[in-house]
Image 1: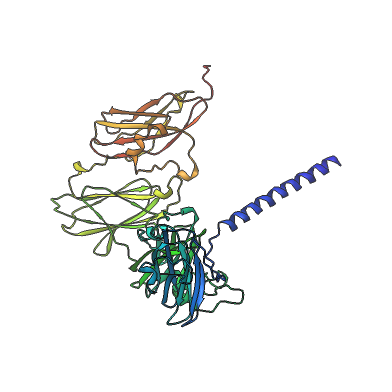
Image 2: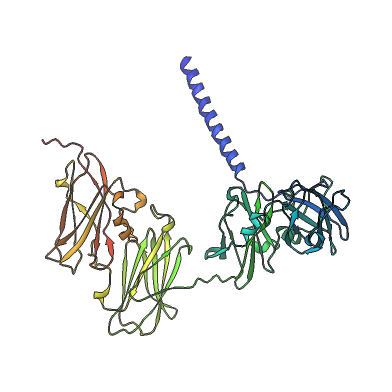
Length: 539
């Protein structure tokens, strides 16, 4: 009976833990869900400072709002943001007061705002009257009174921002990226508008065009800008099925990808930031581009290798190389995957002349008698860029030259690049490994790198990443053992053996051998998994 009760209590405890974890995940999801700015009609006639409020103007209506300044001879600015109609407005001192203050020219002027305007005044400890009129049509208006010198700091810094565009080849996408706001970056959300017609200076003008201008409801919520009434992020995958402008609010994220764009169509992108504390929504950046889904080939210089990030180009990169004076030399092309399997093809005048599949380590393509002055295109396609260790730096490095082979900076690799362990020489603190030397070199510069750990299945059974070997060699702190030396070999088919000391008993290590060409680059042999004996006792 006791055993049965214990089992029941154990199962109840497990169930309680799972429910608690599920509740925590649900709370986290709700907490970080991007929220669009929510605007409600401000019902008081007295305006607050450093907080954006919204009012609604009927066409031709004169609306009076008041602001009681608590400071004297200080800074005061008024920001007016319109939505669907220009707004005439003025900020004047109340002339009915018993102690009149001298008014500046700005206090006596009437301004016309078509999108967003900020005006600075000298603040007196008096009552101010804000007069607003919409001469053309009904509109919502956002108002922000600030006591910061020269206006809100966020508005001054927003004009320095630039939007970066990155073409994505899959599904004709375009990714827009931007830097975080310099003012309260943790408390700032972003909304992006995309249009095929024009740019927008205010977020609510895009909202008004997309959803129309509807007077506020009885509850006082502005339907044109209410979170409940706006489909901020269309659910459909095809942007063309959603009426422009597209309005996407992404919270604190600093990028957004627009799918299914039309070839040759010009698109306009406008970014708006909202401070969650003050509710101030302001213009943050703008750009436009004529969409071209074609990716321009990357130019190769004779004798210079070029690295390109596969993730940046959605796994497909095209290189181009113009052949100079041939002088009887072949065109040598070296393709080195960096954390990915590569399919490659070389084409001339639109016709494929050589193709390679599943390049794992490095491939050498030699084109005999290349056409002088011709442009060869090398297309590389990633079969899989999600291999272990690939990360964001998965890429491909390409080297091309029509010069003499003696000037190629890459070492010549043997036909077999495997590194083998001599098991009979295995000890508790050392192992002995062997490999074939680099052909054509009497003396080779080799480095042996040893790191404790095991090769996983994702490492594709020891296929090395050929990119960035020089920088890895400099970071000796990442290895348990590092040894570099010049090794002389007399015969082409001779085998190099090397004993690796200073290992621990009963441990597993990954061994990598790297060969470097004098005044050139490095290439790696296959990775090798070794194990030391568990005991150092002699029998």
